[in-house]
Amino acid sequence: MKIGVSSYSYSRLVHSGAMQQIDVIAKTKELGFDVLEFSTIKVPEGRDLADFAAELKVEADRVGIAIANYTIGADFLNGSNGDLQAEIERVKREVDIAKILGAPGMRHDATGGFKPGDKRGKSFDDALPILVEGCRAVTDYAASLGIRTMVENHGYFCQDSLRVEKLAATVARENFGILVDMGNFICADDDPGIAVGRLMPYAIHVHAKDFHLKPGSAPSPGGGWNVSRGGNFWRGAIIGHGDVPIMQCLRAMRRTNYDGVLSIEFEGMEDVFTGLTIGQENLRRYVNLAYNE
Image 1 (cartoon, rainbow, N blue to C red):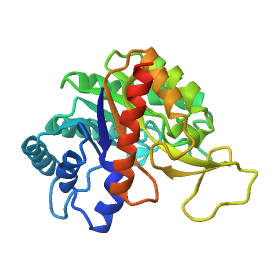
Image 2: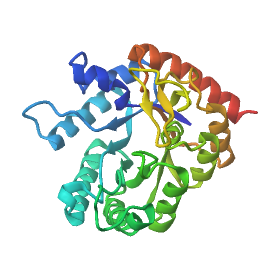
Image 3: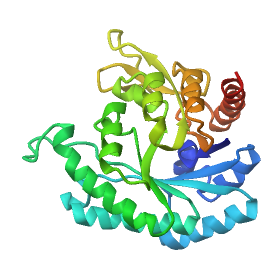
């Protein structure tokens, strides 16, 4: 298994100007990761995304680290001013960026859900046919370029494992699957150990993520915390420091013989490099334990 890191882990530094987007490539190699996943590239002012992606690929080749996945936002219900076909075409252009990066896979969102008053409906089942149309159109295009596409358990509305599984099973394309994020289930109050086991048959890529948790029955813990769909509190943690059952998730991965990429996506409040260093050390140790029991 290859242990990678999502560029989202560095986003605090990139957006503050403490680090340039292109610098995450060499830093990832320096920290000892096997591969890098690019998430929503911050393009320098005055630059074109495609041109900058080509520069990132050159730098990755120079450093000697593969770009394992490309992650973008999408919304087949509301994106591109609610025009489904326009959103599909926009996401297809992002597939072109994945090709430039040399990434074998691309993750896009499905939707954040219906807006209040939307006459098309409210429920996930109301949204499903629209989401399936969008996902099929994108993955069929991506297949022609040799790129697999996936959705992630992300965005609250399409986040718990039953909904994500229903989407993947209904899309029913060999080229389409799921980016299984073991931490994100917390945001939809879904048990990560059970959820990862449910979704691993569809997994193309996996995120290792940890969260600190507090029950919604407790007082608000204040700044830095977020609220789950069911009203519980969560915030990012270093791998191994939080409450996500990492070992249980890894055992579920082992049962399906998953040997692809496992990328850390760090969202904690700690120093980024400290968080990634400790997190990687813990994750490699946990993988060794879980896969050799």
